[in-house]
Image (cartoon, rainbow, N blue to C red; front, top):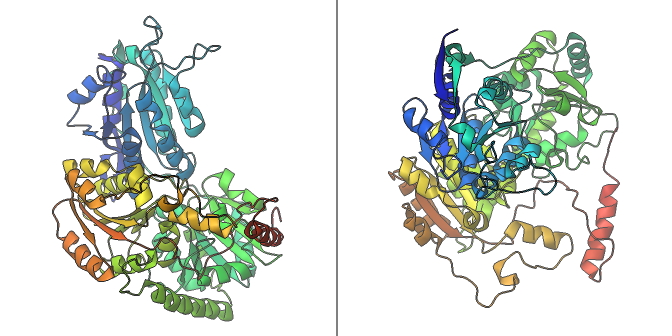
Length: 615
C-alpha cells in the first residue's frame, strides 16, 4: 500500500478537494470552497493546510461566523444540494457562533460541513484558552452544542480517525434522505499531527444524486388513491426543487388538471404562468391555494415536511375523509399524520405516476374551480401590489415595485419578519429557484449573508435581498464580504422602525404594542439610524428613497451597478395583506386583565376546534 505522510489537516483538505459531483454532464467539485475565520484553534493547523491547497479548494474570508455559515447554507440551497461549502472557526465563540446556522441547515435539510477547532486531545495545556469545562465530564467541549443540530457529529482526537469520519460525513451530506449539517470538531493539536495516509484515500470520488424508486406496494396504493380522487390537490415542497422535478411536476399537474400549492421552500417549483399554479398554501397562502386545500379529498404532498405554516396548524384541510399521499425521500417526513407514505425521489416518483395513471384526470369541475380561484387571487394580489404615492408604503407595495423592475431569472431572497408572508403570497417567480426563502427556521440575519451565498452559487442571476430593519441590524457584515469578493447584490431595506411583524401578532392575540416597535420600547432617545450611510461605510453603493416611484428608479439604477447596491425605504409597520392566509395556532393566555386578550382567547378556543389531528 502506497502512503503519503500528511498532517491531519492537510489530509482533510486534500480529501475534500478530491470530492466531485456531476451536474449537466460536467464533473465539478462538490465543495465550492471553505469559509474561514481563523483563530488559535484552527489557524496553525487547518489554516496552513488551506493555504497550501488554496487553488484546488478556495478559502473565503468572512466577517461573522454565523453569517458565513448562512452564506454556505444559501449556496447549497441555490445549488439544489448538489454542491456545498465548508466553514471553519477557532475554538470557543467562533465555534458556538455557528450553532444557530447549524440549526438552520438541520431544519431545512441542507448540506453544510462545519469544521470548528476544539480543545487539545492530549490535554496538556488544560484548560486551554476559551475552553468550556464541565465539572463532571472531561470529554465535553463547547462543540458538544452542535450535537442536537448536526445530522452527523464526530470529534477527531487522532489523525487516522478521518479515514472513517470523512466518508461518513460525505455520505450524510450527499444523501437526499439524511442530508443536513455535519460537524467534525477538530482538536487543535491533532490538526498538526502527521500520519501515513493511504494514497487511495485521496482518489477522486464522484457523488451522483440518488434517485430512489418507491416500494411497489406503497406506490400502487398511492396511485389508486389518486385515481379515485374527486378533488386532488398537490403541495409542492422544497424536495421538488432539490430533485430537479419542476418540469415533471408542471407536466403532471397540467395533464391531470390538478391544482398545486407551494410551500415557502417549494415556491418557484412552477412558473408564474402555469395555469395550475395556485400560489402559496397555508398560513401565508393565497385564497386560491387554500380554497383548494380546504376541499381536497386527496392531498399529494411532494417533498414537504408539512410544518404548521403549510397545514394551517392542521386546521386547513376540512374534508373529514381526506387522505394524504406523502412522497418523500425521508420516511420520518413521509409518515407524518397517518399519511400514505411513498418513499422515493420526487422526480422519479412523479414520472412513475405519469406512466401508471394512464389518462386519469381530475374532474373538470374541480379543475375549472381552481382556474377561477387563481384568476380571482391574481386580481386581488394586483390590488395590493399596485403603486402608491404614500411616503410609507406597505411591504406589498414595495414588493410590487421590485417585481415590476425584475427579470424572470432574478432571485428574490428573504428569511424572517413580515416579508416572508407577503412574498409568499405575492411574489411571482419566473424561473425555478427564483424564490429563495429560509423559513424552516425563519432566522433573522440570514438575508444578506444568504444573498451572498446564492450569488456565489449562480453569479449570472441577479440576487435581490429584501430585508427588514430588524434583521439588518442583527447581521449586516456580509455586505462588506460581498464587496470584497465582487459578488454584487441588490439589497432593499424596508425600515418600519422595529419588529413590525411580531407587533402585529402581539396585537392580534390581544396584547398591547410592547417592546417590538422602537417607539413602544423602554428608551430615553429613539435612535435615528441611517441605514444608507451604514451600508456605504461597508463599501456598498447606498441610497435612501422616498416612495414607490423613487424606489423603482433606484432599482433600475441598481441593476446597472458594478457592486452591491443598498436601497432603503421607510414602510408602514401596521399594514399587511389581509386577503388570503389562514389561522395559525399561537396560544393566547387563559387569564388576563385585558379585555382584548379575553376576546382573543375566546376566538382561539373556537379555532382550536377546527384542528384535525391524527385523523
